[in-house]
Structures are given as C-alpha cells and as structure tokens.
Image (cartoon, rainbow, N blue to C red; front, side):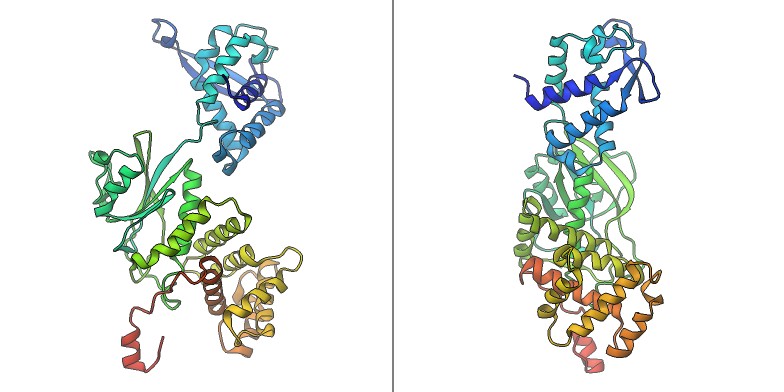
Length: 421
C-alpha cells in the first residue's frame, strides 16, 4: 500500500513536469542510459521542464509533510532532491512519455505508473529519513572519558572503532589514528586522535549539531583563556559515512586554535547528557537554547569586534522578548551576575549593542557609548559581554552542571603576581 503522502507528492511532482518549454518552466536535462531497457549501451539525453508554480507546490508539500530532515533545508535544496529522484527513477516513467508535449507528465502516464512512481518515492530519502555519520576532527580536545549518545559522540582513537560499531558502521573501514579515518584511503591523511561524531539525516543537520556541541565546549575554558589563540595547526575537514559509502572534504576548521587543550572527563558527562536531551527535544525552550549555543559557537573567533554583535544573538535567543527585549535581558542577567552589574550598567551595555546593531557604528569601538562605558566602569564592554554571556549560558542552559575550567596557569600567576584568577 502506497503511503498517502508519497502518493500526493508523486502526483504533485508529475503534474509539474512537461516536455515543452515556456518562459515559466525551468529546465532539467540528464543522460538516461538506454542499457536499463535494452542491450543498447548508449545514453539518451532527457530534457524535462518544471512549471515553476506547480513545482513550488510540490516542493512545499514535500518539505512540510515528507521526511522530517527536509524541514531543515531550503526549498531550493528540496527541489534539487526531487529532481535527483526523478532522474534516478526515470525508468519507471520512460515507456509512457510519448504523449503530447503540452500535457503534464501526470496526464501522459497510466495510474499504475503513477503508483509505481509513488512506491519508489515512499522508499526514497524524500520520505524515509536517511542517516549518515559525520566525523569531525577536533584538535583542541583531550578525551580522557569518551562520551556517546544516540545523536553524537566525542571519542579518542581508542574508542572510535567501538562507537562506529554502535552507529552501525563497519569498524573494519575505520582507522582511528588518522583523518580521514579510513583504511585504504587514497587521499591525503594526517595524524588525528580526537573526533566529534554526529549521526544526522543530512550534512546540514550534522553541521548544526556540531555547532551546538562545540558552542557548549566553548563555555568550558576559563574566561581569560576562552579567546586566547595561537598559530598552531588545527586539522580541518569532515568525513562522512552513509550506507557504507565514505567521503571526505577538506578546508573546514571546526574550532579556533585554542592555546590550551580542553580535557573531557567523566565529570562532563552530566551536562553532555543534558545537551543530548535538548538536541532531541521538540520544546521551543530547548530549541532556543540550542540556537544560543550556535550563536556562541559562531562568536568563538579571534576578532572581538566581530564577536560583539554575535554574542548578543546568544542572549536574545534565550532571554529575548520581542515586545521588551532590553528589559527582559536586564531582568535575566542581574541575578546571574550579581550586584556589580546594576540596572544602569546593563542598560548602558545594551545601548552599546543598539548603536552597533542598528547602524550607529560599524563596530563597537567606533561607538561613543563604548568610551562612556569604559569611563563609568573602568572595563572594556566587550570583555564584560563575553563574561556575561558565558555565565548566563552556563547557568540557564546547563543549570549548574557545567563547570568552567580553572585557569591553566592559576598557580603560577598567583606565585608571581599574587593575583587569583
């Protein structure tokens, strides 16, 4: 029995496809190998034309009612996925496509063919949510106690094979000591011993999970070390496994070159469990918290002027109220930061943000209110914002289960300067 959504989607898709060109139709050409139907090994070029308004109806229906992962990608990407499916299943339609060029493909084929096309659709990634595992090398981590959940894992080289097996991957293809972590890989490899693995329906969703996890990890360093970077080498790229097919791309660095390694121990598993819960939750509050972590991850960069407006995005995600955003943020920050951060101080801090975000100054240092803040509180407003956002996310999202690391050289600083950091 054909899935009703698959039948509706198939009907909408076929009604949008024509063989004649008009100004309102987009072209899709591909080579259809005749060897699928006969002994002729030559290909036949097929050109289809999609009526834009009808195809939009099909794309919107598929995006809204079919595989859930499609709601995380653009309408244009859904359209590309539909065209890829039509190309891959054209053998179902081929024998009945000799109708008038003016007719839609739906009117050219029989009801049985529409049903066969819908059955194929019902078994495709457009209906059945696919899964793939993305492996991101994370050079700044030292994993003492690996972590694994249904959504993501953080592994060292010793645990990668076991986690791969748990994610239904063939452990024999995994080489845990290099990136890309595959045996018999023909491309360039380099030593690697720590990975973030994400199981998701699409690369786009995997990248969003990666952003949330790494945004949380960015909350761990001592506030004086969180933006302390060096020029050391960071392994870049992502490796993917889907249906035992492996691939890798290079060039994407997942973290800045943090000066000191972050160590993951069993003490971190409690907040990692909380993060796992939020990643699978449909609650709006959890979704907002994940967005806040994504913003925080995007702000984990060397340039403090660029960080400034992005960090406010994290605050808005968890505290913002469309009707009275300034007041709701001040009311939320006050109890977290204590008496030193008075209403007047926080209001001035938010006014610096307003001048930057709303066009008053290209960056924070060109705002006159930046100078006013320094004069009144003897602190750089960018440093204060970095401290405030980290404390608020640690408190609000992880409810005290996440512990910021002590400064790596706290004892040495105390010995030489007498300062406690």
